Image (cartoon, rainbow, N blue to C red; front, side):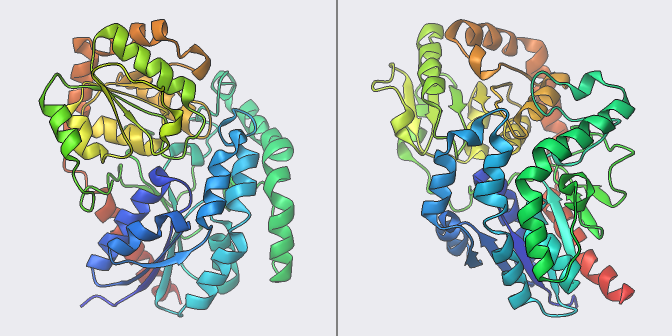
Length: 424
């Protein structure tokens, strides 16, 4: 019989960031472990409806304040916004939650690389930590560089200059946002200062799990040696979401629609949705606009276009013709799983990198936000709906079918507890 573990799962960010961790938490609980889920208050209702024990980090007001900040989606100011709204405000709280609930030889933590409090708890308390990366962007490589934005500078540099590029980025952009406050907290715990936090420090020396497949982001020789890739997790609330009769009626009375979403945390997408509605009208195609914040929508929607606040992608995308979206990794993965061509409109974070990878695989196209006009979108959609890309999407969906990413990640987390005990 397996030993019952106490596993603390931390979810930071929006729905696309938190959903995979919910899926892992549910799988670990199903295996008989005691699971504590730590996230922003906005996810309390969801996690408690699933029977998970929940601990709050940010309040709902703090979460909404963060996503209202336009800097969160700015190509160059987004990292500082993430640091001041998400990484630093919860650092001490995460450490204290782990400290309070830590039981020697029984507790394991699974947390994203942005959860500095979990990494510090590993150093100070010796708690086993699995760092979970949803996006390949979080794993730097001078040999297989990710795209950090446009222009894609790193792609045009030789490996030695890429290393210099990363050093300069750390010195002038990354560390100034996070190092001072992080090291001040570390000092109170008797820990030495750290620098270049996003180079190697954020990765647990015990285990790093990449929740994406190697065909999407091949393993690089200069990644940490303890990285394990499990494939895309696809948990999306379907098991607890109440089906919408209005959606079902819409889907059954006409051709498969175009689907448009700017992301669950986006509050700056009025232009995106206005152009999207115009695209549907001009193309004669039906459309679905997805957002929890309807104030971003046009005052009147064209005939054949409807708005819904949230629909699990696994329920909607297989019945759609194409997806136009922001390029978050969760949305990207769901489109690939559904065999759906996708047009990505990336602004910042991991979105440019995901967009480049999708185009490289022949699964879609991308347009920068400033180029998101009716004419350009219609041109891109015409290319996307041609047989070659549709066939590529179908083949990749077949490869993804049966992927058991959540189960594989859960296996690794369980094994981490065993190997840590053996070392002790």
